[in-house]
Length: 77
Image (cartoon, rainbow, N blue to C red; front, top):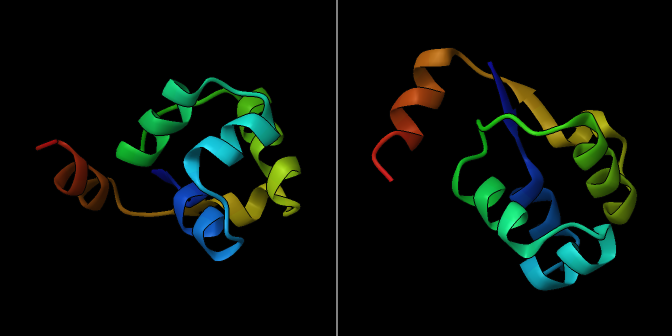
């Protein structure tokens, strides 16, 4: 299962949620949802916009994790 590392990369690069949403030209609510649930599905269009804004390859924003890990970490929000 894929897990998005957008929050971690954004923090390393000094981006707040608002600044990143504006730079990537995506809705703040979309970014907030990604931060809350990094195992959620998002479009390739959105992840490409985030990678471009963060100046990283798309591969830097994803990691492969066991499905159990993702489900346990984010189902009780």
